[in-house]
Structures are given as C-alpha cells and as structure tokens.
Amino acid sequence: MADQAESLRELMKNQNNAVTNTVTIENEQPKVKGNTRIIAVSSGKGGVGKTNISANLAIAYAKIGKKVVILDADLGLANVNVILGIIPKYNLYHVIRKQKTMEEIVYETEYGIRMIAGASGFSRIANLSDDERHEFISSFKVFDDADILIIDTSAGVSDSVLSFLEAADDVIIVTTPEPTAITDAYGIIKVMSTEIDRTDLNIKLIVNRAQSVVEGKKVANRVINIAGQFLNQKIDYLGFVYDDIAVQNCVRKQKPFTIYEPKSKASICLDHLVHRLENIEYVEGKGLNSFIRKFVNK
Image (cartoon, rainbow, N blue to C red; front, top):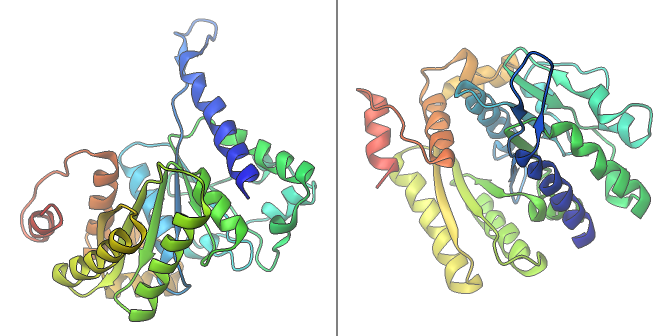
C-alpha cells in the first residue's frame, strides 16, 4: 500500500514540477503548466452521500474557473456517473484490462468537468501485481493539466482506499449525524492515523445532511475532540451540507443539485466549502447566504 501511494505522490509531484517548464507554440506566448491539487473524498461507511458530495464539489470548483477531473475510484460500487446521469462506454475496467488508455476513457461532461468512470463489481485493482500497479498509476499523467483532481474512493478502509488517501494533498471525510456514521468516520480516521506513514496528513471533515448549523458543528466537534484526544490527530472542520429535499429530488433524476438547484441550501453550502478549501472569501449576500456565512466561519 505504501509503495502504491508513494508512486502516486511521486508521479503527481513530477507532473506538478512542470510549473517551472514552459510549452511554446508558434505565434503564441509560452504557456506554463500549473499544479494539480489532489483531493480524496472518503467515508467510514456507505450511504452518507460521499459520492454526491464528490460530484457536486467538482462542479462547484468548475464554477469558480478551475479545470477539474473527478475519478471514480470505487471499483466495487462505482456510481459517480449515476449521480451525473451519464452512461459511459468505457471505464477503469478497460484500462486495467489494457483495452483502453486512461486518456481514452476520459469523459467530457456537460457540467464543465471531466470524469473517469469506475468499474462496478470489479475489485481487481486491490490485487494488481507490482508491474500492473505501476502502469496503472503512471496512466494518471493524463491529469497533469487539471487544477483539481477529486478522487471519490469507496467507503471503508481497504488497502486501495488507504493508498489513495495517503497519496492525496487533502483528505475529506464525509459523515452524517447518525451515530453509526460518526463512529465509522472516527474509525477510518483512526486507521489512517495508525496505518499511513505520513506526519502531514491534511484531514478535513464534512457533516452531510445536517438539520441545522448547530447540529453540524456539534457532530464535527465530537469527531474532532475524540480524534485529538485519543489519536493526537488534527482534524479541520470544513463545513456542513444541509439535509435538503432538493438533493433527494436531483438524485432521483440523476442530476447534480449544484446545477439544477443552484439556489438550494445544499448548493450554497457546497459553494462555501469550495471557497474555504481555496481560502478565498465567499461573496456576502443577504438571506441564507449571509446566515450560513456567519455561522460557518465562527
């Protein structure tokens, strides 16, 4: 697992070092490649809305002008494409079987982001040989022009999940106010703290389906305090997403809520989360915008 994560980090580091290199095209000014920020989104258990958060986070990033790729790394129950209402012809299965290259399976969506579809019911990635793993990781070079790479991992603590979490610049753990979700969120943080050989883990927490600002904060404080006390692991509270009927309606229609319900409470929360990730100020408004901003930034 450590070798796989280290290979991925080194690959992305080499791609990111291209920031000092220029590509000159005739009659054009040299273009400078930028850094790719890797954000892995995970959860201790399924059913907490992790994939929905991942997909809409990617779209929210695109709205502020970022070039975004979302990679569905859940090979057992891949469904980023379902959230986006897309039926891809090819996915990671075809890459692993060497029937397609990573570049050939990139899907340009109508939402301003690119998508790499996972392979439902196919978990061979966890058992790749060293050569296969290296070749698979090397195919990530297709993302070198992206500003943001969002990796939607599977739920739980498999070796493949931990490899992606270890390699990421930022790890976002999604939970809900349900006691089982909170317990499992702490569980995956505990495994990361003990199994991942990094002292600079950048773990952030999102509380999904919160009924109120107070509930989101209460759940976050519970996880943060326990992780700090028993694991000596720092967790940053990124924010919450309201329990919003608009989200449920969009899931049924297989449409991203940040596109089809942009003024919903959940969409506004996603916008705030992106701005906090980028450490830029959210434009203050009246009503709900102002209300959420005052509480989230306390």
